[in-house]
Length: 433
Ligand SMILES: Cc1cc2nc3c(=O)[nH]c(=O)nc-3n(C[C@H](O)[C@H](O)[C@H](O)COP(=O)(O)OP(=O)(O)OC[C@H]3O[C@@H](n4cnc5c(N)ncnc54)[C@H](O)[C@@H]3O)c2cc1C
Image (tube, rainbow, N blue to C red; front, side, top):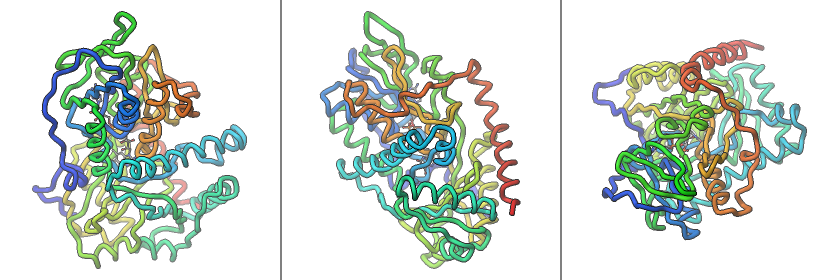
């Protein structure tokens, strides 16, 4: 692989959606609602609240959208870390179907928002191909998808080795499945559209203004920041993988951040792109340590990601390792130059569910375990509706106990070890007949 000195350590998405620069504004003395974090979750919540007549102030530590919302792969799916079959076994059909109905609703929420707000972000039902490395992974995938088709009506088509090769240009996979209704978007443009609509709706977005703490004061909440404080009735932490300084202790004990990595190739000819990924879909494998690949929305590059949750390394080193992985499964990637490589932070939870939670007027929506494009859209809006006392805010993800642990720093440091264990499980499953 060639990773030239001039490669950009910035997300591909920032090319079409450069980082917005907002004029510096004073911190208002009072707000109806404060949102900490200006990603997909925060801005979806802000839009609902502002449209309901609330005065909303968003604190953002970096530039707007500096977090994972402009760094992800743009997959819009129904992904949950608990398979439907596992939920069925453990909790019965009613609960499993209810949870998966919400996964579908989260997927639909992206289409609702994009259409209602008129955001041009290449949102397209391009279909997703799920890739199995071994016959055993293929059998497990087929069984899960058959159950979902029967119980939930989710359509899919199984692919043999040749079928996958026709989609990926690679004969390295034992098989796979095409899920035709899953979608993809350009996350930079999605975020830019949300930001523009939120500003137009009167939301105050304070960029480069980290919130440093929240405390009770005369029946309200005082949110302190590096540039002053504001009094608010309610506060939403929409900080997901960037939850840290400034967040209340109960939240930091419940959110486990981890890093994810991606790169974009050099600009390729249409023939090169078609040889590497003949089909314009999103691709993901069945491993715990997922790899994922897609064409860029302009069709000129291949984007690739994986090795999530590994020990942090300089982006340049990680990009080299990722490129080697890409070339091992998509042979056409060998010898290509990496032009852009980047990282971003996601968040998991101890029970591997997303959560919407509230304590003493301080709310949190997050813990999306790598599925925050739909889930952030969905729970951002749900959080706002709950803050407004509206029935649409109801969600299973607000009713589950939100488990915590006493040593957040230790939990964070253990993520690479947990991922190493899952990678060992993956290796066994990839060898199994
Ligand atoms: C490489 C990568 C690929 C991914 N691919 C996908 C995908 O294809 N599909 C999918 O669904 N999900 C994907 N994800 C996950 C998805 O991007 C996230 O789940 C989602 O963006 C979370 O959005 P959010 O708004 O909750 O948080 P973020 O977008 O991470 O925003 C949190 C914000 O909070 C701010 N913040 C934190 N603390 C403070 C403070 N004290 N004061 C002020 N601001 C603060 C941060 O600066 C940050 O901007 C991916 C993530 C990564 C990194």
